[in-house]
Length: 420
Length: 185
Ligand code: SF4
Image (cartoon, rainbow over all chains, first blue to last red):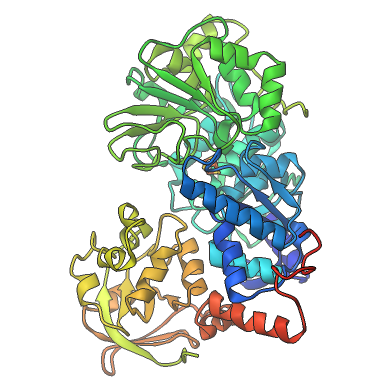
């Protein structure tokens, strides 16, 4: 009998020998992350209530990534308030605008590690599961409490074990894998559960691919989404279901408006005309993703009538893309390359949609109104799908195009980013 | 501190999948508070916000509070005077946020089938017991563990933090804005 990764981490963090799914525990937090949207509110709440010090400022990371550079006076004032407060509370690990998207920066900077329990004021904190941590999003009052006490209560979740076998075919990526999971599990089955990945197929997925998958765990409703790097087969009482995925059988997938679980094979939406294509976000804005897009666009130009926005996930990714000449490829093909950050992903600024417009993005949510007008349509797909679709001006299956252009579709999904 | 043993109120019944968008509609987030409160749950029951009375209890089907992590969703119910939410099941982040803002929420399988609109509902939050109608059916809800009950007894995290701050002050800690309070000032 083996405990799940969630049980193992929560037992360790709550000072218990073992815990079981369904129990409540009060656990000590290893890392806490805040971004610019909530930092001022959370720290302001601590100041207003008279809390004088944080439990452990060294475990806290603040990253400005959502509204950067500040698009309005209100955002600028909000950020100024946060900067004052984080200094006052002795938070040293502060990453200013330009460093990158919070989840990417946390991993690049080693602010999260295997076996840790991590909370963030952002629902996509499940991303930390890519490095073997249990990460989840919390609200701002809870974050204030967590900062003050260093602890938080958790219900030990039941776990869905996902067994991966084989390897992804050329032109098929981790995004297609997680989108097909969305289709199969919907946004209910994994609700409040931990989704944990194992099987021999895991080894073929590098850190970037794992981040893409763990990132979208929250779209399935999961509390954690973890790659524990465990070799033993799951068999404890905490496992409530197993999902077997044959990687070789997967094909490119697209989420259609307006729900992330409305997923179809790309072949069923081919030909849908696009106004905008977005490559970026904490789901797919890494160097591996930019390489896949650049290899398609190199020496070519995106279709007339389509706009392409590319937002590197971090300054590290951005510099690597510069070194490899990818930015030149992208700009040469007609892309607007933005500075590192969330960009238009959540509809804050930098590329919103007009009523009636249609966008395909590599990000993680296509809710109505997420990228601007509620009357716009958002499709989600892989970087390959985004690149070939930008080239054609309509949603396209990348595989035939990649097959016709040798040397483009065999980009290693497993390769990790070269550190700066 | 409010007692968690004897909440009694009229039931307002809702169906499944009541979302945070219905509780706190996105298009009004920048409106003044009284305006925002007028639209709470209007997509599900337009008369709710105008007719709900302090002490009333929201009864709902499965997955109540699904959607985003906005804390305004449970906060609006508190602002309208709702005493508790009892649902067949609750969305995870909503349940956490509700306790954080001091709103008792109970997972009570079968409650939506057992309750009619306007029924008198008695909720014993600490014991996890819900009674519907006078001498009516008694349902058991999932027990809320002690650390969360403690948050609820204080009326939410903000009052709890004030209590903790008072303890820090008594221990002689300096406020964060005082010179020398934090090394990096
Ligand atoms: S990139 Fe998008 S999903 Fe990721 S943290 Fe930023 S806004 Fe959220």
